Amino acid sequence: MRAMGVTQTNLPSRAPLWVRPLWVLTALVLLVGAAALGFRTHAEAVVRQGARAAGLMLAGKAAGLLAAMLVMLQFSLSARLKVLDRAFGLDRLLRVHRYFGASAGLLACTHPVLLFMTGVYPLGSFRWKLWPEFLGAIVLSVLFVVVVTSLWRQFLLLPFESWRRIHQLTFVVAAMATVHALSHGSDLAVSWMRLMWLAVFGGYAALFGWVKVIKPHQLLSRPFTVRAVQQLNYNVCCIELVVPPGGEFRHFPGQFAFLRVYGEDISAEEHPFTISSSPSTGGHLSFTIKASGDFTKTVPNARVGDAATIDGPYGRFSYLLRTKPAEELLLIAGGVGITPFLSMLHYLADTQPDRPVTLLWANRTRQDIFAKEDLEEMQKRMPNLGIHHVLSHERDWPGETGFVDEDKLRWLLAEQLKRTCVFLCGPPPMMVSVSAALRKLGVSRRRIHTERFAL
Ligand SMILES: Cc1cc2nc3c(=O)[nH]c(=O)nc-3n(C[C@H](O)[C@H](O)[C@H](O)COP(=O)(O)OP(=O)(O)OC[C@H]3O[C@@H](n4cnc5c(N)ncnc54)[C@H](O)[C@@H]3O)c2cc1C
Image (cartoon, rainbow, N blue to C red; front, side):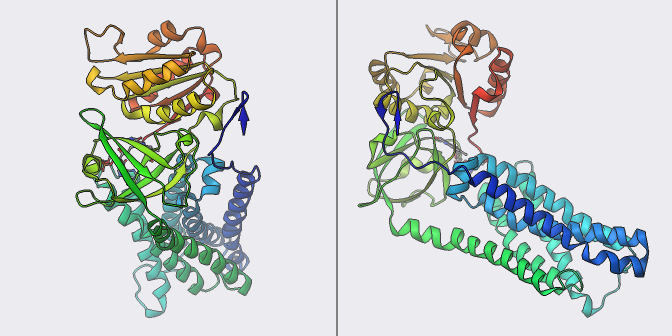
């Protein structure tokens, strides 16, 4: 790959153009197909129950089938499939995943309500031959728990790992929903319908097995090794890993990966972190991590020689994926949100040192600034790199103080804003306010790219 006359190496391949339309089309066919299966009961019900009951029956069955299909389909969004990540970006896929989940929950609740309203299914009568209905009730209850804990995890103060374990129950939901649909009279009565449903469930189960069992084994069979752990300031450390012998790890600067370290004093949980080193480093890569919670506080406990697995790279937050080769770049970071920009700047220094780039880095105090020598070194190699530190809680700072707001952006970057492409990564409130300020200053939404440190 070449840009501005410089060879770029060690990058992954890009997604073929057909991936997006193909996934959208397949999803549409499956969802419309699932809802249409509910129509089969229509004619039969009109004869037996009349038009109102038939309408309710039709809507109820379509809602149930659609909910089950959504549950199965949406696993493809969260399964971290590289091909879909490269086409859409994992953060966007997970956002759609959340909408699909909430819709599935809503449709699943609507399903029994509409069916009971037909009067065909009397409430409160217990007979063993009604076991598919009882199974349906269990499916609904489990799905309810999964959806509620996903939508309101933070409000419920549920730790991430506990939420993740509850979320795995979605597989049980899909399996029981399939049994419920197949065993229930006319729903999937015709053999081709059963086959189609079983094929979709089979695909879902195979993907689930690959993601939960085969892939972790594969990653662990060729582990990375911790090469160094360095404390960069009072709460940020850098962990450097060596690629396994004979292996390679390609990424775009700015992408992230899921890291798991197997050490004595560090929990073997998997967490997402941006790769802060440049793709041009080849045989090793680094993550720069702020101690912000239970897991991240233990990262400095990793020891040289500890094994680690890296699942990635993921994401589309990279100037190489979002801008034209010569476009001017404005990088705005808040705190540890600098990590994607460390990778981008290192790679730019290696491949396009003359590209005009401005970095605006907001921190609370001067103690929060890290990688200072690194940035100074890059400034020497990149004649068109401007760096502004903005400190919010430092009175005697000779540079910019306060928050990054509309006035500061206008004053520091007035002319640049007309032509620059903006990359923004920082705490959520800062991302919201800086995006709004940029919009007010006339930067179009299309030219603002953001990365949230939350999936
Ligand atoms: C795309 C992306 C890139 C990131 N890059 C960096 C980086 O370069 N440097 C850095 O310091 N931090 C980065 N983070 C944030 C980092 O993942 C969290 O700070 C870390 O997972 C918190 O874990 P904890 O147990 O220490 O904190 P906790 O207080 O337990 O968790 C804080 C929050 O982090 C999220 N989180 C926790 N565990 C996980 C998990 N296993 N998977 C996904 N999210 C989780 C949840 O939203 C949780 O509410 C990134 C996050 C994302 C999504």
